[in-house]
Structures are given as C-alpha cells and as structure tokens.
Image 1 (cartoon, rainbow, N blue to C red):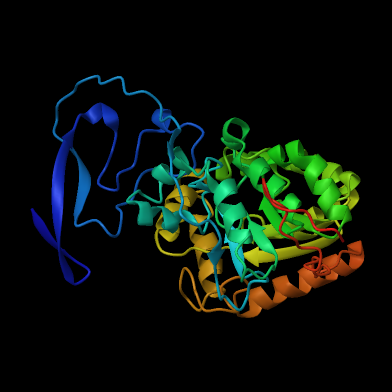
Image 2: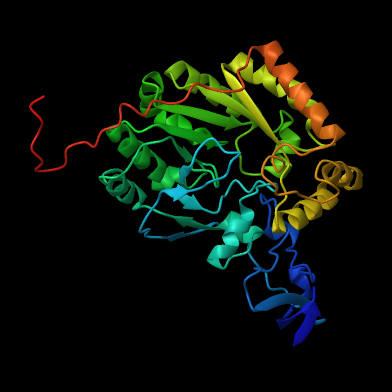
Length: 382
C-alpha cells in the first residue's frame, strides 16, 4: 500500500496484530510489556522505505507476549575516535563504547542516532544495544599513530558508557586503562554509578590533571526521575557518586541537564546546592533538546505521565525555541532564547555564585601524553 505523507509517497507494510497486543497506529506497546522503559513505542525509522503500522484485525487471541528484554549485539569497529566541529562544545573528539542506552531517558537527544543502525529511536534505543568490545585495542592503535595530537577525549557525550551492560562487558574500564597508559586526558559524562568501579584509575588520573567527570542530575524528585529516566540510579545515589569521585581525587562537575520548563525548572538551585554539598566543584546546565523523533516521543510521554500539565510544558518549551519544539542552531540549541531562557540563565549564574561553583574547569593536561613502549620495543636510555 502507498500513502502520501508530508509531500512524498511512501510504501507502507500493513501488519495485522491481535487486539491483546494493544499496539495502535503510533506503534505504541502495551504498558505491561514495556515496564521499566520510558518510550511508549517504536516510531518508524526515517531511512526505511517501508513502515510497519499496527492494526487491530478483531481477532481476540491471547499471545502472552513477554516483557521487552535488553538485547546486545557486537560491533567490531575500524576506528573509535569520533570527531566534531561543533562551536558550542568544549571537545573535538569522543568515544562511544556502546550504541543505544538502557538508561532509557525519554529526553535523550542521542535517540535519533539509532536510526543510522536501522533501529527505532524509541524502544529499540533502550532495548537493542550494541557493544564494541574491541574499542580499547583500536583506541591504542589510533593513539599510537605518528601524527596523532592529543586533546581531551569526551566519553558519554552521546550514550552513557556506564549504563548497566558495562557491568558485564567492562569496555569502559579497558578504555580508561589505555588512556592511563598513554597519559591521555579524558572527560566523562554519566548518570551511572558504575563509574565507581573505576575510582582507582580516575582518582590517579584526576590528581595528575588528566581526568574529570560530569555527573548529570536532572531532578532530586525520585518519582519524576523514575518516570523519565527509568533505569538510571536515583538522584541521591548519584550524589553519593559525586562524593566518592571527589574523595578519590577526580574533579566533578554537576550537570543540571536537561532543564524542562514547567517540570523540573524549579529545582535548579536545589540541585546546585545538593551537588556542592556532595563535593562538586563546577556546574553546567542545558535546556531540554528535542531533535527529530525525540519531540514526538517526549510529547507522548508527557501525555501519559503528566496529562494535567503537558500542554503548558510544551508551550514553555516552544517559547524558548522560537515557537518550535526545538531550534538546532549552534549557540541556541542548549540555552534557548527569549525571556524564559534568559531568566533561567540568570538563576543558574546566581545559583553557582551562591554555592561557589565554577562554571568552567581548568583545561586538562596534554603535555604528559606519551606512547608507551610495545612488546619488543627498545626502551629509551633517557
């Protein structure tokens, strides 16, 4: 069947499901099958020529479909250092040990990247993950290249390196061991408390000026956190992680991100205060970002969990993005514009000043970088 949508013709594969599956024409999945997940369904992959649409054929069969489980596939990368030229980022290279993220944050701006794998940014992003176990070996080879020039590598800037599957695969720890061997600077962003497994490495690198961590705390409300970040450790648990990293010697920046107008914006000052008391030395924030499919996923989530305020939240979001769900322009995408965005920025700056939190951290050291001797290499006499 062919349909005309948004000015183009698309092939649509019509698949008949039983009524028990409770999948509607938005590909929403029954709640009992997606317990512990944030997305309500799987929006179509924008690159696919055919789209699958659920349809109730009237048959009342009990299929007893099981809950969605996390699946992990393996990728063998040819390179692991990704480059960017974004003017509003403080790093130009990053590493992603995993693709997709079991944390399942409904607001995650990285969800659309799953479409490049032929997977949906919805439930697929949370349940169909990719691990890259050979990343440490490939990284060592890239760092050893004669023309390589060291600059801070960001990790966790797309999907979280300390999501639950790190406990099984341990790819992030192996990557840190490579970076430590090369004395290479690294900045980590995470919501996961599994980072505490690497306190020995991060503490030593932090004291040497080679590592720092950013811990994201979106809210102190455990109920709100559980709804929009279903598999992320609780806010109080993340505060303890800040304390442990700080005590180990790794500087920590709290990331109040994302700030969602009408939902968690009233917590900015309290998050800054709690983080400072836990030992954070710096802070940053960003407004909610809803690129591509994330906008629809977030609207569906709001309608399901907070129907009484969904319209107001989206109105405030659009007020900060020129009337749109999202403005991707550099310089605006993370801060927004307009009266609300300006007020939020003033509140954040005052909150940092009151808590003694820096808004910038000193650059990490690059002068210590060295390629360690390999097996059979002749050692230097000096």
